[in-house]
Amino acid sequence: METLRTTLVDRGERFTAFNAGSERGAPRFGLFPRDLFTTGLMLCDPELLRESIRFAVHTIGKECNPVTGEEPGRVLHEWNRAERDGLLSHYNAAETSQLLLIAARELLRLGAEEPLPFLDTVRAGLVAAGQYVLSHVEEDLFLEDPSRCGGRRYFAHATYWKDSHLPGRREIAYPITYSLVQAQTACALRSLAMLTADLSLGWEREELLEAGGRLVAEIWGRLWDPEHGVPLIARDRETPVPGVSSDALHMLAYLQPGDVPASCLDGIQAASAQLETDYGFRSYAPRQSDYAPDAYHLGSIWPYEQVLIARGACRFGLEGIFEGAARVLCALEELGFPELIV
Image 1 (cartoon, rainbow, N blue to C red):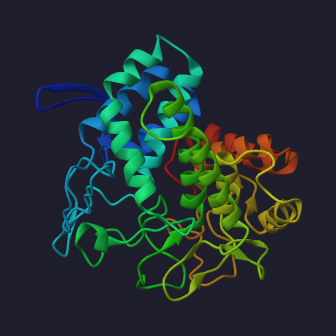
Image 2: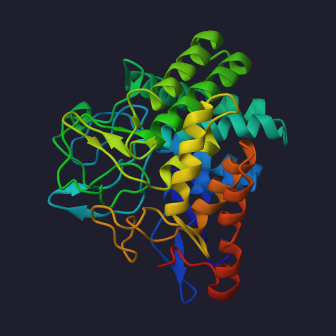
Image 3: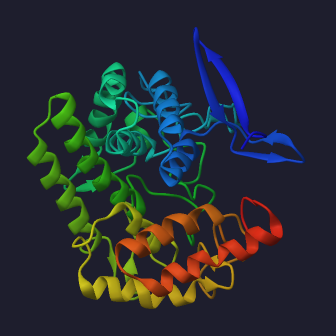
């Protein structure tokens, strides 16, 4: 972690953060709030969560910008500059505002160093993130659409963590719903319910909890893929994006026991066999459209995702899936800490 640590000063504010990766002891990639939040949540690290929350609120979207994808209340995707076809990657993340709310809830749960006074200092950012999330929910689906910032598309092909490519889809017909982001959004609304109860953010706790429950129900409704027995990868304006991917296992980390119908849990567990390897679960199953074991998000194994898969498996009593995800430890002992395994 020390090779990744960096200090950032912006508009008079100093932050301690971590670059997304290193190579031969030197930083590689840059600062991604998605990565910072996910790491803090995996480690249950109050200090990392605090700094990540501070940084996210400091850089949270204030206006609409079709070049960067910025919207009010939208948390940054990437601090560093990446440009293609006249577009920038800065706010190209659909779920970082949700992760901000989940991280704030987790900090409150951990109860370290009086979290309420700290969270009160970032109240405006939490409210903005909550407004952003709720404004994107239409008919109980979280919809991603560049027209909200005045654009036609984003720098990134997709705007959830698997942002390099959607299988079988060269162009996205917006708006689009990503099933994993749907689960993260439900978790965020439940987190906001806890936060609003303690910080008086202006929403009704029960209404937020009910809204979260309705989003969960749509995963097994409009977002369910009966052919594969798993949630769809996504659904855009024109057609669903089907397939067996790690998203179905990953999302269990953001859901609660009782959220998943038994038949759907059985389907996810059965489909997971297509993803399982000696070193964890692939991001996408073989013999499907665009499958490539060495592709960034279409077949490789991501070590960090195995932690979330294992956490969800524990929550839902899926012992075999937990053991499959834990096998990544064998690879890490041999390889160190690679971004992905092919």
